Image (cartoon, rainbow, N blue to C red; front, side):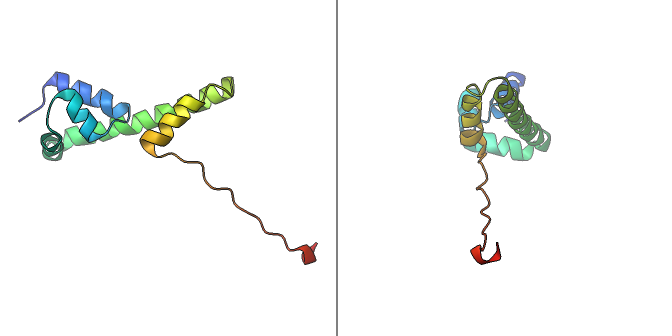
Length: 103
């Protein structure tokens, strides 16, 4: 089975928002197993959807940066999306140990 042009457009929008394969399949009305088979068989579609996912990540990061620079209180919702959807995290700070006897 193939996806209709409308289903492909919806799937692209879902992936750009960071939705999972399962959630995307639900939105377009096909079982997730069938959706995954279609994407494996149609490598161009699979690649397109992954590109949409990556462009969505980039857009979220750009939005965080823009909002963060314009008003410190406005970036948190986008940051939450980036963390929850894409696994973005803040790196742990590096601890610098100083030896008291060296100073």
